[in-house]
Amino acid sequence: MQEINMQLSHEKSAALLERSKKVLAGGVSSEFRKFNHPHALFYDHAEGVYIYDVDGNKYLDFTLSQGPMIVGHSHPHVLKRVRDYSEKGQLFAGQHILEIELAEKLNKYIPSAELMRFCLDGSTAIQTAFRVARAKTGRNKFIRFEGHYHGWLDNVSWGLTLNKDKMGTRETPIPLPWSEGIADGVKHEFIILPWNDLELVKKTMAENHNEIAAIITEPIMCNSSCILPEEGFLQGLRDVCTHYNSALIFDEVITGFRTGLGGAQKHFGITPDLSIFAKALASGYPISAIVGKKEWMHSLAEGKVIHAGTMNSGCALIAAALGTIEVLEQEGTHERIYALGHRLMEGLRKAAKETGQNLLVQGLGPMFHTGFADVSKIKEYREVSAYEQPKSKLFIQGMQQRGVRIIGRGLWYISAVHEEKHIDHAIEMAKETLIELK
Image (cartoon, helix red, strand yellow):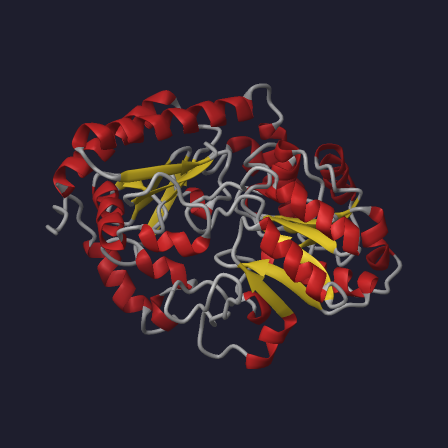
């Protein structure tokens, strides 16, 4: 397969990367930042739908910083909220009024958010949810699904490596560690299953329910091919958890506020017991929330389950979250995001058809995935092996060299400030790239 023609220069980024490697491990502060094309890039500033690197290259941005920038980069209302409130203080080691106002907003919009606590990121909020579920049920294990990302901590860093020769059968999966250095004993904390197979979940719960404190799932499998739940699957999880008095946990780190102010649980009409929100909550400021029904959250309220954090609910973080939600509350915002997402998805499908390329586009609209495969649908993690990864990598590389930035695994995000002209430009650049790939 031919190499993509390079159109942009990255000389300054390359020099900064070499300098960075002398003091930062691998030159980066997150493993995934290594995989920009042609290498890790350094960025200078961002505004609206555009981000600019140190070489002066301008990118139409559909990564949105891996999802958080749902109202675009440097939104003036969010920045003013942060600036004004930060003048009163940064961190009090105590409560402040905007915490209550933010909690009241989440309580208003999110079906499961009767009570909540704020954390700094999705990883810590998810571990809090496990602790709550274990405390209430007196059980220790949880069920999770292959390909679902619930943070990078040890007990959830399994089942994220696609190796069909070592993964075992669908009925008896073998969890594979995602990284070296993971404690082997934590694999006994969970049972892992393929997603979208309700009968297998029911069978597993029937055999192991006395051990299962919770089932955790992304309501949309966003981290691997943006896979939607099959009809009845989420309701089936709700029913089986209710039957066995286990917690149903929705990891809405990605879907929260992106699918709507009420999250995917509102979109699908399925209310979990506990949920995690992060990313799009605060426009890039580090905040997350564990929210849940009172019957599950009372252990936190009573101090029986300990949740703590010096930096939790910092003034700037809470102000950023309120500012973000206030922008999203504007009439028609989510309708526009969906419409633009559908326009882009259909435009990419049309471009693929016109160029004879096997580009598969799937997702909800506010977020979706592109990859090359000779199938009509991907419905679970094991099927991701159908994608032609080298070709997908070249497509993403080609788009970036044409000034359109996409997440390296093929995920696209739409913001509240994208416009039809941005969508149409992305489609045009995609068609050029698809032609070049031929």
